[in-house]
View 1 (cartoon, rainbow, N blue to C red):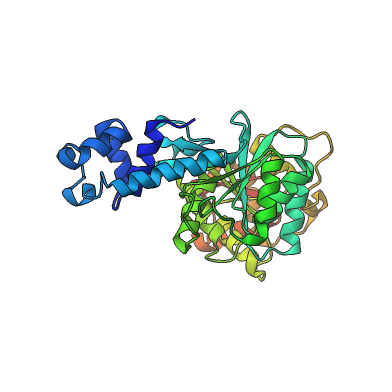
View 2: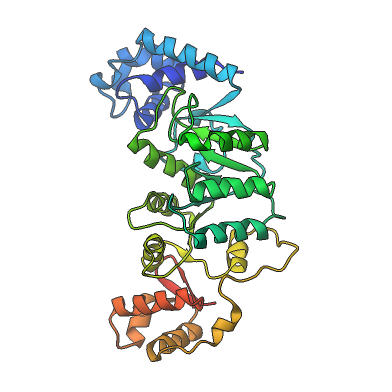
Length: 369
């Protein structure tokens, strides 16, 4: 089940100063973890950017003993070990420059299925909860895997609704497999496995959750999928980091807009305002954008079509008409046609997005819906 390369990869990754970046540098030079373990300490000048201090802990027999115990734990608990340099990371993680060098998997993951990452605040409101329920209701006939972080709130709802509608789901942990955090989700983690889903982590089995671990976890959640959906988040919430990672990976990001007075919609609204996320105006548009198979039942809109008859302000109507006449118009071109500063134009466009009339794209380009 495991090879020598698994053993030496775990041992090498445990060495002081050998993080993911230095690990890849060593592999690039010595071609395998075993060769790096055996020769890096003497031949480190061959590796670009690797100094004597970096390799000082390589070859430590304690790390090799740790790796042996780790393999025993993984074998006992049916845990798969994916190695980045062997090009067997799941999902789209292998495309990420900062992908983990080791990724542990418990449970099943069908690589033939597309994935969608869905995250949000732990303090989810009824608005966010209903959106998640409606999303899974409307995509129940589609074949995909949902990805989230097994946290309380929105993440938990994503996994539970996936299980309810018999859609595979995968949780990404911020710790090792010897525990589940939060403990309240231990039963949920077991249900995920029992229902044909999976749990993933880059941390060894004994690693406990730390604050920095959650940020690392978020990059894997974002890296798994071609698209990430942000349901609700406050300014500075963890979901903002997930959206940032997804943007950096050139993946699609969708955000659920809300009232500007609602704390847990402000982060989503800000992502939309900064053109770092596309507004979710209707479930139909979202499902179409994700490229899922069309569900058998009619998809109802979050914002009914009757709203398209709402009266617009003078400036809203002006900008709407210009965008209608010039699809994919840029912010700079809009500013040339309107005697308003760019920041005011962006504010009005956000209002139009929240009304479900305008959609924004990367590069600050806009079109009507």
